[in-house]
Amino acid sequence: MGELALTVAGKVYRVACDEGEEARLTDLASLVDAKISALKARFGEIGDQRLTLMVAISLADEWSEAMDRVRELEAEIGRLKSAAVQQASERPEWTQTIVQSLGEAARRIEGLTQRMNEASRD
Image (cartoon, rainbow, N blue to C red; front, side, top):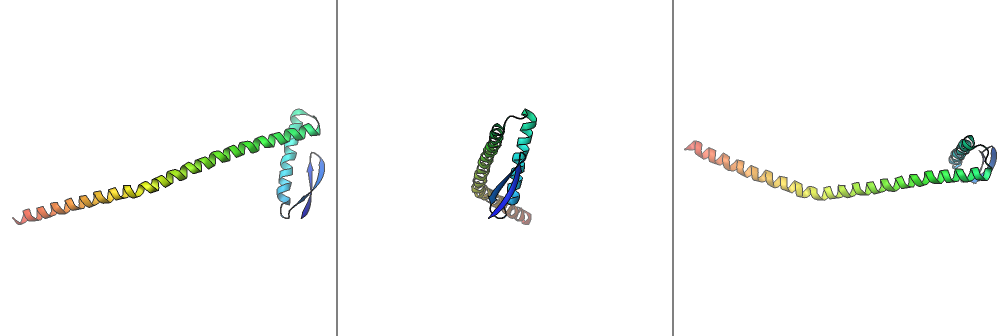
């Protein structure tokens, strides 16, 4: 297990993490630090606890919106898969209809050819 020093809002926090997770945690801490900096710039010094709560709510809101979008996309994927399955199931009927039509057209052409050959012999 690794240990990492993260700086958020000017304070250093030592955290434990699994091997290989250091870069991810550093990126996440930078995101939180940027949110805190933006809120400080917007509202001034409003206290660490309040600032932390506002950042947590902001990140939770972004996460919630992302999850809503994921659910929408999953539903769309489901609809597209259903449509593809339906089209695939309809395709053999459509193909069969074309094959039958082409077969009938070929029989008519052969019949016409035979009649024309008979007529030309007469």
